[in-house]
Amino acid sequence: MAKSDKEVADIPVESKYPRGELIAYAPAIFKVNPEVVVGALHGNTAEELTVSEVRQAVQNFLERKVK
Image 1 (cartoon, rainbow, N blue to C red):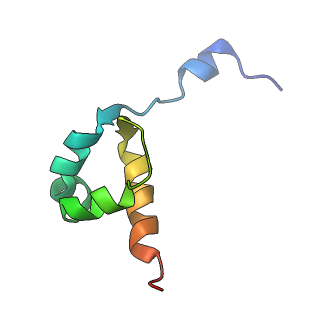
Image 2: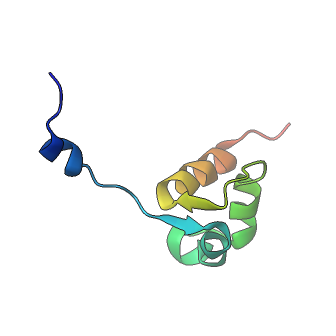
């Protein structure tokens, strides 16, 4: 069944923030040092990201096994 226009409009859209702002506020938002966010975003060239995108990247970065 296709979604109506009202149902599509009700889906919340997460705001995007500049990369530097997310790094600067890393302790308050992600409870990690800014260096952790820099490492987690290494290789990601996006200039604006959502908080959940960065939160997932940080979680993956912290769970990565050291070789």
